[in-house]
Image 1 (cartoon, helix red, strand yellow):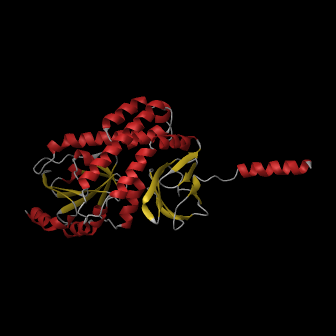
Image 2 (cartoon, helix red, strand yellow; image 1 turned 90 degrees about the horizontal axis):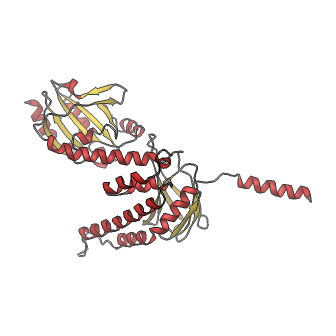
Image 3 (cartoon, one colour; image 1 turned 180 degrees about the vertical axis):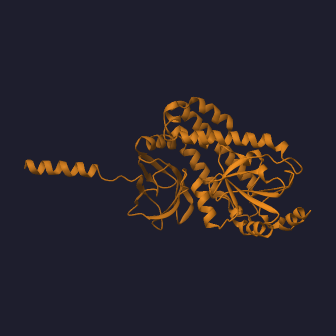
Length: 366
C-alpha cells in the first residue's frame, strides 16, 4: 500500500514537471476547427512563421519557433475578422479560454497581468470588433472610410487612456513595457516612461521602451529635417555598415551620381520595385552607384532579404539609432534620392521606381 502511495506521488510530480506550452487553452466557436498562428520575432533573427493548429475539442497548444520575444496573432481561419494579438514572453505560459472575441487570459505572472488589463479593456475591444465588422464594401453607397477612421481613432484614444491608467497603478509590471510601446501619443509615452520602474526598464521587455523612445526621437528628427531636404539641397553625409561588413561613406562617392533607395523587407511596394531597381543599377553602373538603405528590419531579416531578392548592388544597414531615413525626412517607402557629383539632391521620389527610369537616364546624362 505504501509503495502504491509513493508511486502515485511520483507520477504526480513527473506530470507537474512535464513540458508546458507557451500558448494553450480552449477556444470555442471555431467552425472549421483550425486556428492560424502568425509569429513575428522582435529580435535580430528576423524569424517569421505562419502555422495552422487543429483544435481538439477546442483545446490547442502552440510554441513560437524561436525562444525570443515577438508578436503572435491568433486568427480564426474561417473568419479572419476574429483574431487576437499577444506579445510572446519566453519562459511564461499563456492560457486562453473562451472565444476569440470573448475570452479570459491566465497563466504565469506576465499573462495574469495581461488578463487583468484584458478585462479592463474588454468593452473597448468589443466596440472595435463591432466597428470592423460594420465596415461596408467600397462599392456600397454607405461606404465612408473617413467616418470609420474617426471612430477607430476615438476607440484607440480610449484604449490609450486605459493603458496609461494601468501603468500608473502597476509600474512594477513587465506588461507596462508592452503597453507603453503601443501608445499613440508621444506625450502619453513620455509620461509613463517616467512612471515605469527601473526593474521593468532593465528587464527582459525593457527593449520595447528603448525602441519606442528611439522611434519617437527619429520622428522628431524627421520633422526637423524636412526644411533642409529638398531638390537642390546638399545631401547629408553618413557612414553605414554594408552587407559585406565594410563601411560605406556617402561623401567618398563625390564626383559620381548616387541613388539612395530607402527600403525594407516589410514593405511590399519596395520588394515589388526591386527588379526595376536592379535594372537601373545594371544599366547605369558606369555612371551611377545605387545604394539600398535598409530601414526598420532586424539585421538577419535584412541579410536574408538581400539573398532572397538577388540584390547585387551596394546594401547598407540603417539601425533605429542611425536613423538616416529621418535625417533624409523620408516621406514614404520606397524613398529615392538622386545625388549629383557635387553632393546635391537633384531628384526625390517616393513609390515604385518604374516611373522615373527615363528621368534618371536624362539627369545623369547631363
